[in-house]
Image (cartoon, rainbow, N blue to C red):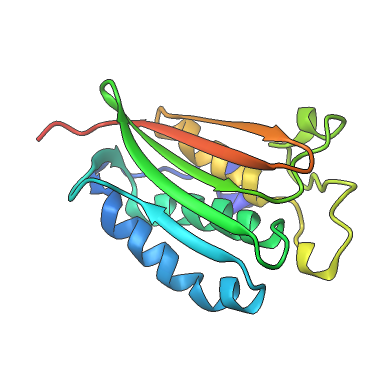
Length: 166
């Protein structure tokens, strides 16, 4: 995927409903979250939320954010996926109460192959491509991805995308 994006892979720009994509992604991660003893909840107060996007690539972004939130949460931790309107955009949030991101690593967070020095447990496995790929996809869709974090308290990743016209 990283190579395809670097080679100029295109993303579709069509109306996509985020609500079933969130539901599908949560179902895909149910076993993983149970295995790591992390509770995952959704706060999606709308029946439909259409954005201009690519369904397959948006599932990929959601998967990267959700799997990171789960693996960096301690057993007994909580992850929340939220979706809300923010003006003419839709705001998707994935929050955890895990490790938080060390300040020294923050400038490298969206770089390819970047791995936090605090990612020391076997459950933290990965090659450091997920967030870089997520950012590239969201950028290609004309959206924004950002985060807030506090070490020892947790992290929230926020994705904002233009809402599709009805």
